[in-house]
Length: 347
Image 1 (cartoon, rainbow, N blue to C red):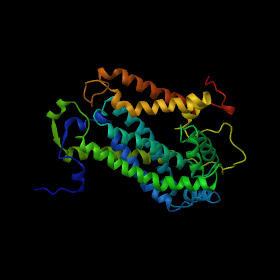
Image 2: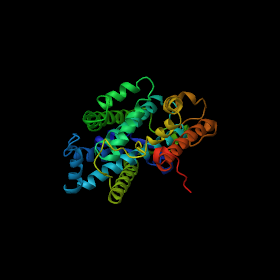
Image 3: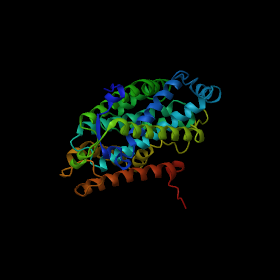
Image 4: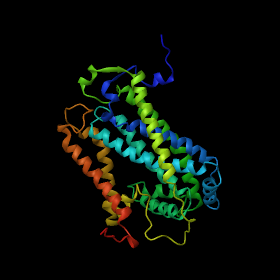
């Protein structure tokens, strides 16, 4: 009898045939896991050389990128993987929603949303660490946006800043969160996420999919390995052609105009610029509430695992409208706002 190794214990003995079909998941889950693995390895490497002090942080980044052998590649890979994971996470969230895969799996859906929140927090705290002009003022704007979080905003802002202003305490706390607390929490939640997926019987699928089954070894292993290798190859390619930015040293006395939050929060900044109440409190609360309540809002009888099922079309349409509106707000804030946040006509 063939012995079962650790890899076998992570997978069921058999899977549904549709599990290894590309259009079922688009390989997004495995791609996200690959990015997370790259982030942990490259992050640990950078951790060995970085010093979270305002006086030396910028020089340490320069040292990593200009002096250490392969230092620039490691930092570029970390930067690319972080941004890629955020994009993949949004696509994965959309895939789960549009296939109704949250039906009967509310707990795992909640795990996924918590992971997405931690990912945003990880990117935000990491953005400050170079301590250059752009990251410093982006963190300044981002910390200001934290104050709009209902109930906890002002306290969370003070906790992040380590006082009333952005400075050395902020950098130390950002580093502690980015290199310690957040990675640990993400690994734990990822394990719970995968465990619940296994406990729930694998990927959500209609009942007729149970009639066609395959052994996980080798079919699932080959599919996962292929996606992982392709994702890693793409990350390395992007890292070679798109270096992680490093601007001039942070200058607290001369803010850029406009000072923008990181690209994944600039849509939130755009909403706040129109209305602090609606954009900073009401809209984010409604969006978060809608996502959290999705498994209970879906009253259709169609099982999960089917793309854009007709009985769910109103809920799917609302989700797509919300997603596209957020992407549009990011686009406006990132590319169509100039000095004093004035609108720039593209033509």
